[in-house]
Amino acid sequence: MGAAGVQIVAVALTIVGLVAAIICCALPRWKESSFSGDNIVTAQVTQEGLWMSCVVQSTGQMQCKMYDSMLVLARDLQAARAMVVISCVLSILGLLVTFAGSDFTTCVEEGPAKGKIVLVSGIMIIVSGLLLMVPVSWSANTVINAFYDPNNPRKMELGPCIFLGWAASVLFIIAGGLLCFFRPRESNSNYSAKYYSGQQPASAPTKNYV
Image (tube, rainbow, N blue to C red; front, side):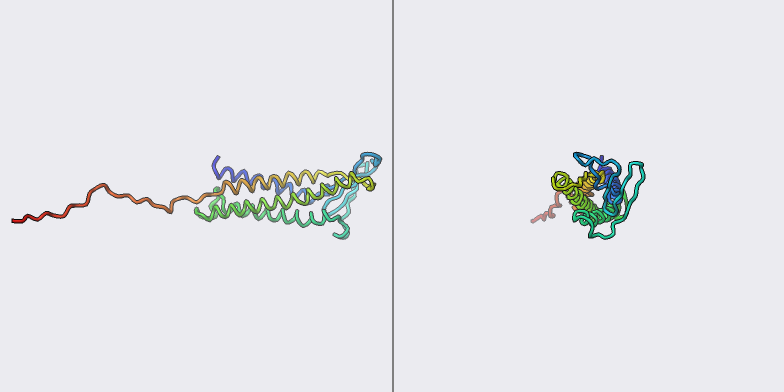
């Protein structure tokens, strides 16, 4: 597989990671009620996300409510709001820059500029993956610490959005790494070889002296 094929794979991974990141940002499934130990209440399930919290009844009815203020959120979710949104925006920009400089498009003429553009796009996608991994890991650590705290009666578990965020961040990092290593390389066409003929220079005419 050539560099163009690897770049297409990287673009596909970025698109899949972007879809997963958007779902992770939108769905209220970051934290869910736990039914372990003495906390056995199956009448309703509480789900929390970045923008709203939902209560699912045992009958299947769901009621969701937007947060009244950002200040009511925990610190990990406050940071996650900003970092996840920035990650999604940065990955979209990285995709657009990739299409501009990749080998399978002709937006930019062949030359050293193509490689630099793809390198920048790869770095942008890697940074977007790190921006997504940090808040997801922070929230997971907060939930785990609260779960094992004996003084905390309200137990929560990791929601599916946490795992989806981890998967999306890994896809971003892999795609960005592929773009950085398989970017268009500068050719050596600037160096021209000089060829010399094998003929010996003509000797000076001899003069006959009397």
